Length: 170
Image 1: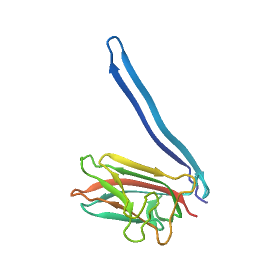
Image 2: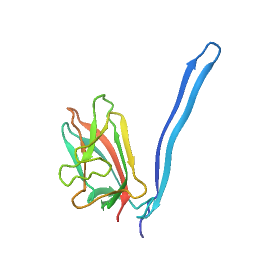
Image 3: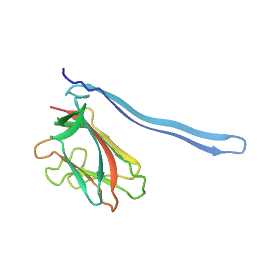
Image 4: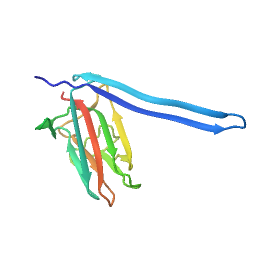
């Protein structure tokens, strides 16, 4: 029986700013929300592969994820996910210690530059924060020479994080 994937991508920020006036309270209340879905498939606005992991990085260490050979245990068995295109990257730094920052960046060998401007660029994910990057239409290509995503802990403390990658097999 073939597998199917249905993906909901959501990111929102709601706020209520209040200022007390002489006889009333002034309110600025609103929300900015991004909510999209992707059906199962390999075309535009579709995804057929997902990979997720929780990992703990020791001080000054890195996880280098080969996007063409991501392993995971699902339903009691070992599964290898090979991404041809990446449509979403979601990383959560679960540390609650201010200063515990993760770097999301291309790997040193066969660097995947996907959402990054170049091989030296990175996204910082501070403690108790997240990074959410997506490219629903065509995704970012993965190639034999560009397939390694690095999550790096430049600090002096261990950091636990969660990562989810969504993409296509072709």
